[in-house]
Every structure is written in C-alpha cells, then in structure tokens.
Image 1 (cartoon, rainbow, N blue to C red):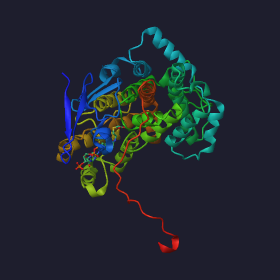
Image 2 (image 1 turned 135 degrees about the horizontal axis):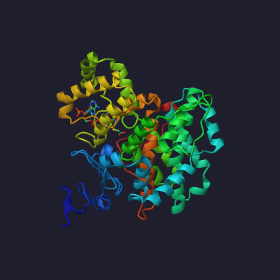
Image 3 (image 1 turned 120 degrees about the vertical axis):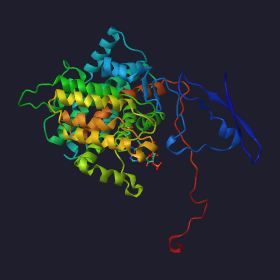
Length: 430
Ligand code: CMC
C-alpha cells in the first residue's frame, strides 16, 4: 500500500503531498525533491541525522538490531566463510562470484599490483615523519595523472579497470608510505602471494634477509578487511559519492574519501583508541579517565565507542573482540596488557549510566588497533589499513552512482545566517 505524507504551511494553508518510497528492508523514506518547488522552503538536517542521501543496493544496516548486510549477506557469515577479495567482488558486482569469476577477478587484481615508478618517486618529496594518511591521500590523488586509459567514467570497461587498479594498488602505496617513514627501501609486490600476505611482505620484508609471512597474521588482516569493507553512506563514502557526482576523476574521488576517513570521529578512531589506552596506562586510572569523558567541558571522548547508526552492539566489534583473543593467542601474545585494559574499560563503560542512557557501545575501531598492534603494524598505519579495506566499498558506491542514469550532482543548500546586503566601505571609513 502506498503511503503519502502531507505537509502544510500553517501560515498560508498551502499543502504539499509527499510520496513515500519503500526499500526492500529498513525505514521508508519521504521524497521531498519537489518540496522547494511547491513550498519555497528547504529542509534542515545538519549531519544528515534523518536524511537518506541516495538510493543504494549495496549495504544495509539495522542499527537497533546490530545487523550489517553486504548485498544481503550477513557480515558474520562473510567473516566466517569468505575472503576480502571475494567480498570486494560481491560489493562491486552485486552477487557472489562463481569460481571462474572469482579466479578472473583475483588474477586481474594480482596483475595490477605494481605502481608506476614515477609515482613511487613522489614519496621522496615527503618528510620522513609525514603521516601515512597524508601520503596515501596525496599519492592516490596523483594516480589521476597516470592512468588515462581508464578514466572515461561513461565507459563500463574503464570503470572496471579503475576498480581493479585502485583495489590492487592501494596496498602497494600504503606499504610505500610505511617504508618511506622507516627509511627502508620499497618492497615490490609479489604476485604469487595472496592479497594480505603480499601486503605483509611489502610492509615487513627487507632486502637483507628472508621474511617469513605469518599465515595467522595474513588471515587476521583478511578478516579485518572484510569487516571494514563497506558501511553504506558513512562520511568517507558520502565524500566519494559527492566528489564523484561532479564527474571528477575517480582516483581524485577516492583520495577525497581517504582524507575524510582520516578524521578521529571516523576511521582515525582506531589510532585514537591506541593513544587513549596508552594515555590511560592501567586499569587503576579508568575511573579518572571516564570522569573526564563524562565532563562535557573536557572535550574528551571514549574513542572506539558510540556510532551514528548503531544504538546497540556494532556487530563488527563483537567479531573483532572474539578475534582479538584468538589472534593474540595464536601469536603467543595472549597476555597483552592493552587487550586487558580495553576489556576492563569496555566492562566499566557498559555498566555506566552515561554510556547506557546514550546507547554507546564499542564500535569497530575499539579493538581493531589491538590486533594491528599485535601484527606489528604501528598506530599511524591503522587508518591506512582501514582505507585499504574501505576502498572496496568506495569503489562499489562510486560505480553505483556513476552508472545511475538519473544521477545528479550533489549540491546541498543552506540556511543563510550571515549579513544581509550591505555596501562596500572604503578602508579609511571602516
Ligand atoms: N564518548 C563520550 N560521549 C559520547 C561518545 C563517546 N565516544 N559518543 C557519543 N557521545 C555522547 C555525546 O556527547 C552526546 O551526548 P549528549 O546527548 O549528552 O550531548 C551523545 O552521546 C550523542 O553523541 P553525538 O556526537 O551526537 O552522536 P553522533 O551520532 O553525532 O556521533 C560518533 C557518532 C561516532 C562521531 C561519536 O559516537 C564519537 O565521537 N565516537 C568516538 C569516535 C569513534 O569511535 N569513531 C568511530 C566510529 S565507527 C567507525 C567509523 O565510522 O569509521
């Protein structure tokens, strides 16, 4: 049954009928696209608290029930049974690939792992202590200057080559950023290795000795990447869509997404959680720390807690928490003091009225840094790892938007509260 909303201007009595659109699951959406034409007003929703910015078939979240589906598949099932590249393929193409499709995809990703040598030289221009996210964002943007054979966004094959290229090359660029910060030589990709094993090799191998890739570490990374692969219209994905909606070069749009992800309210939270745990130091200091969090004037947040959409456990956090114990045990680090501190902090916060009443639960970033740390990845690289995984989602959303025949440039409006028109004053009269 189709529902309609009626909006009435109580001053003029003028009414507007608003259509209601229904998705396959999730709340209905009121179509306000004719509102300005009919009533001469805009809607106001800072932070998009109640605004669906697009229609999408990729990812579904039920924040109250703690549900996350990629193309309809529960993230728990994918985490248990799939691999990151299969999930990337699923996000981009919409269905689980057949064996032949997956093999072709893996082969294509493998064949695109190297980056242009000139692009590698850009790293020499960065100071050794540049943040890796700054380097990755800049180098991804500069890919727009290299791959001219795949940037006709109206050509489906070009779009596909772009998708494979960015997923394949981001680990190489991330590793180059890491090696630059260490002052070590870049390690080239090895195409006989799987995606995450290759990444570990590029991160940790050095020319003077043999590096043994730990399969436990590669498996843990792959699982973390599945959990981070997509999250519907989050800030960085919306940024990719908005930048891409202008017809901008797709590498530039992904670079914009990397920059948006970096903020501590978004992907940068994983690095901030480790800083926070370091700052707390020991369980004895938790109460003092939480008192600062609850004092709104202090400007301190419990990083890795809270989410715009989840008002219940983030399903990804549940999986990562369990994974922390397994991975640390397998790596022989089961008595990790950071993990013990994080578990205690979570326990105390989950019983605290402040967090309970606001429905603040651990999110995906609360435990992920503990695993990255155990794998030897430094905190400054945590958000880069998130970016590698989220590239799959960014690409899927960019593809969905660009191939939509009804797409429009993203162009929000505003409530203007600045000065009204006034005349220019010569400098001596100001
Ligand atoms: N610590 C303390 N108080 C919090 C926190 C927190 N982590 N998160 C929310 N609150 C409080 C907030 O002060 C507000 O209280 P009040 O109603 O009294 O003013 C209430 O809870 C609602 O918060 P909000 O900021 O209006 O909620 P939001 O939906 O705009 O923000 C968030 C969501 C994720 C930005 C926020 O929860 C936060 O800053 N969390 C810490 C950073 C973090 O872990 N980010 C990672 C998010 S998950 C991964 C990702 O997106 O990349």
